[in-house]
Length: 206
Image (cartoon, rainbow, N blue to C red; front, side, top):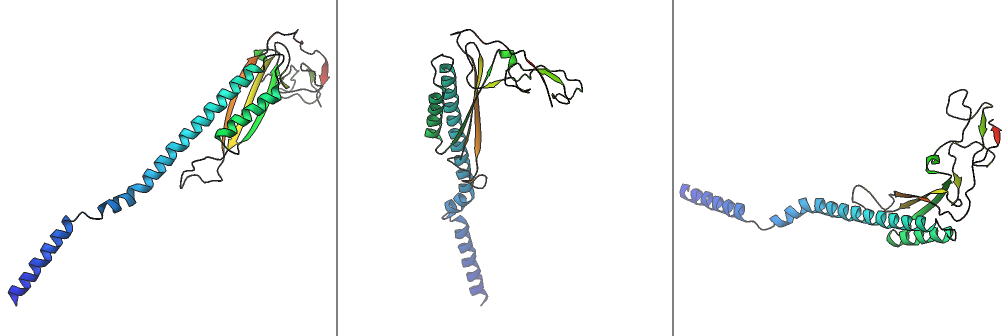
């Protein structure tokens, strides 16, 4: 009886040894562990690459249209549509918002109209007087005018693009996630005519 038990025990040990040495199926287990990480990594690389491509196309289009917009014969609406078509070609369904602000000089960008800030709160209010430099009949915290301006004016051309990533990252982003990219170009219009001067009419803030 004892020799038989010893024989069975030896067979069991040999079987366990063969089982430990058998590498079959290990690849499947390793892939099950490493596969999701690899997939997420690849999707992240694709997503970053696509975002860089969209940004490059956007920047190039904005620079080109802004440069063409300095001409007297420029067609700004056609330029804006050109940007939209280029961007939507690489980011399908993207929402493209375009804005232009014109200034008399570079130093005027984001500058408020001159006013007498008696209460030192950084706003024109409580009957404080101001100079209507952009001639629109009200005080503005940014002196810029909407549009492409005139001769010698400085124009800030901004395009904001909102789109859905083509390569959403599993577990991090989904098809409902939105991404926003912005490109801006500052150009000075060519001197095709005399530049209009600042306005000098006085006003009173409410």
